[in-house]
Length: 394
Image (cartoon, rainbow, N blue to C red):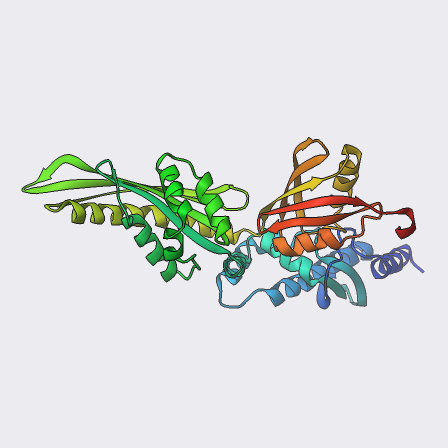
């Protein structure tokens, strides 16, 4: 047997028996195949075998990716633009590969390769690369919690109710398909006036607390200020409006989008002129806010705030080590330790899956030495308590 043939059979044994070192086992495995060829130059068959296998592998991986991508959509266009980069090794979704056939005809060597792909890991990979942006945005939009709109508005130094800004926001958001908390129910709440007054003073905390009270996961707060301009258009007074919008997660109070808009309108009637000016400013601000919002929906990653009580620093170090192992938690992209005080750890996770699925994974995972019991859950924040396991239950 020639040395090149020995090398080939050893390589075949390894590719058949051992999975890819970048493997992440998490879901359903699917098989794909590809064919490759190379010219044997100056009798160097080993090099030709290597080149043919690389070519076959790329074609098999290309088939796997194309099986996920929807034809005739933005996904397909993005794939064509990024195809060369996507087909570069290593492949984090590749479970195993094996050579199933190899033949030499003259100087042409042909080879067939079969691969196994982790379907969930492949979708996660394409999401992280931005290929599935529209699909991810649509899925996230379906999973969005209720939105509460709360606006403080002043016209010429006096508070104005019901606010023009709030009415316009509600109409546009409902038209865009968002689910909103019932506006009339909010207005009847005793906390409504206090929250509006806080907004006019630039404080969103009361609004976030009120949103949680009504089961909203997101609160869009607004502050609209209308003043008479020094400008006049004939007998008409010019009215100017400035609108500031902010979107917050109600459970964590985290600000994730903001926008401003301005508008002006000349009219002899103060109310009509103010309304038109606010309408222009609100539309500008909301357009910018929704564009920012859409960009965040299109990313596969999201942030989850986690607190763990009853944990020592040594246990926290052990926990972070386990969480950092991709084979155990493939959907956890990053961990940031925010604080540790009085046996309470506060962490920020960047995850590439649904927050509830990830929380379920943590709550049911066997950490051997302890378990994490859920105290409270919301889409952006989870509170756990660490509970040690008895020696008999390990």
